[in-house]
Image (tube, rainbow, N blue to C red; front, side, top):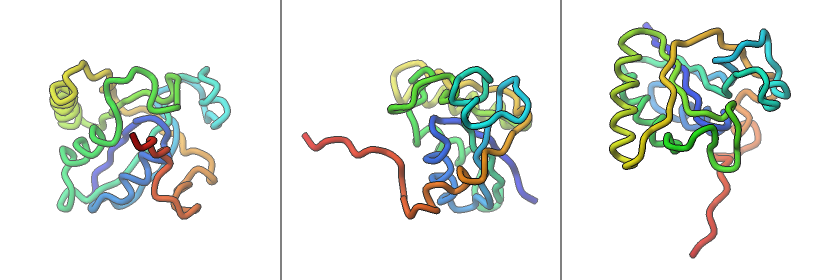
Length: 160
């Protein structure tokens, strides 16, 4: 039996490739969730008017990777203390959020958020909210980095 999880942590391309390379993750799909518009497009979501977050929905094998381990990956792949931004991406659509699918996931996400705040020594602004309708992004966004032979979309920092 597989589990499901949905996370938002900035641009969904980076989130997808990190989770896609996580042992035990069976599939990833990028898309939009947490908003009010039906069938939102990338342009609409980027315009900031739909309320959706760029997110990744994944299925995983709980015998290979636990939900707690996925939360650890999630909180380590972005800065959960930044409100509505990650790196150069700014706006509500780039917010940090865990969209839980069960009461157990909700409890685990709240505990992980508290651990992240302690580790960062600042409040974590990550939303922990019920999973809503997930709208898959356009085909060209699916496995975007992988299709281009890229391992990341992060810009390396300048050497000091």
